[in-house]
Length: 451
Ligand SMILES: [Zn+2]
Image 1: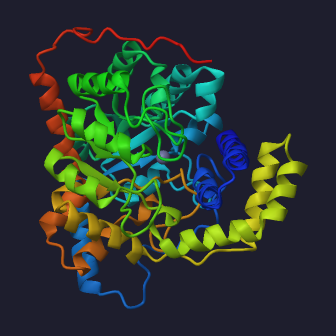
Image 2: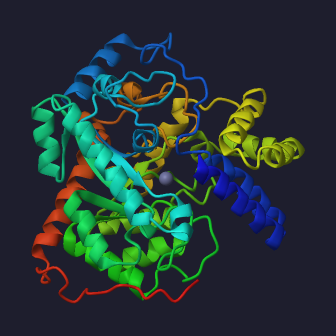
């Protein structure tokens, strides 16, 4: 929540400075994207999975059977934020409040879930980024301790497969926001030792070594230290995540990485023009790199109609939003509640599940079916397409993919096998690295020359 307010304030200041209409429109759309971590969710439908009246029952049964057997891995889930901020216990049913709980993870057939170790940009300016990441890592471990029959910590592709056999959900972890390492490769290595298996190089904020999608560029992509971070991640076997970074950073990562990369929660720019999405030229490079793009489910990233409507709404409601910000400047929680109320009476059109499947389709066509997967962003986004309202609804994706004519083998790839292949390949690259002792060639810490 704090993050949202901070980002909103930041963007507003930015707009005043730059004073460009185009930027204003972008910032307005991003503000909604920023209403993510811990945001109160809009009313969530709780109907049975795939309640569509025209459902083909035979196909549905085939989908369920395939889904139960498949190894399903999701690249990004932000339930970690309420786990750390509100002491939310994953074992407590939270229908209507969160997208994720243990019962619904199991209902949705989830095998492996990447818990996002999300570090808000405020820690980059105020300090404490690494500490925040460690707090979040601890809540994931404690959830696994508290629910040993349902959850198990996992560090590798083999661990995920073992969890499947044990009928437990594999808890994986990825850092979101490279400022978490506080410019230290020493800290990066420690995070790997704690079980971090990917790092999103930036959040929406540019850091000291990588440019973000949605902030002023400072390096034209990655700087030298940023490239060293990528190489050290390759050496460790930590996946490099190109979600949230600028296009230049995506390309610099693809130039530098010796292991396949991921986009843990990003969709296709060609279908919805948002800087959080991946452009086609990068999709083609990911094919060569052997990586995987895990599709983000958020309507305001994937649905051009929703993006346009949200932008128009933000412009229309600007006077009210401005006065709310003034009125509740000292009370971010109340500001969020009042803003959500205003949005609730000014809804944007719902996004159908088919729009999400279109993104999978597009990436499968441009990058190849071996290079697409799922990166839900559950509990990091305030709304979801109809039919995929929470983690229990994943079988609907399997059904829709079969309905579009994907083979069972290809569906399994999209549901998790592609990501597992990439994890295993990153593990292999790490084993094959000539730099086998920590610190060989990589004793670097970026000197603090700023601020
Ligand atoms: Zn994110």
